[in-house]
Image 1: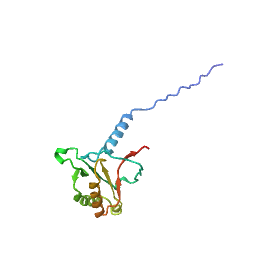
Image 2: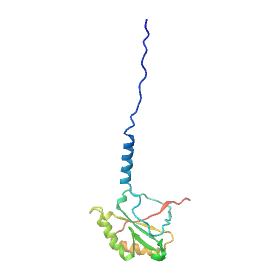
Image 3: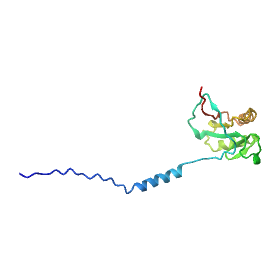
Length: 153
């Protein structure tokens, strides 16, 4: 009687020749779609901590105003300044800036615009109240005061 041998050897080769192409396509995709920084901050930013936080759902409706001392005091002085996008503006330019930001949005979203004030913790309340007054004049009543992490008790 003859013995029959079973062939249990199954090759388990996974083709990896296309793997580098896939990796480079993914790398290229993320390089193209990633935004590292939209603005260069020209003012000092030491954001205060908060006791209560609320996260916003739609960040496309938020426009940022940075308030603080300029990082280059020789060029811009030592008084607190307002930065909108990549330029320093005065309080009288806020109305124009808000209207430009509203024009970037669709007609339905213009009334939902939220202005985020990222003020340095050393800034006095005077410039902030001037900004609030100008925002009321242009009917931008949704104001967000930015802060970092929750204050531990």
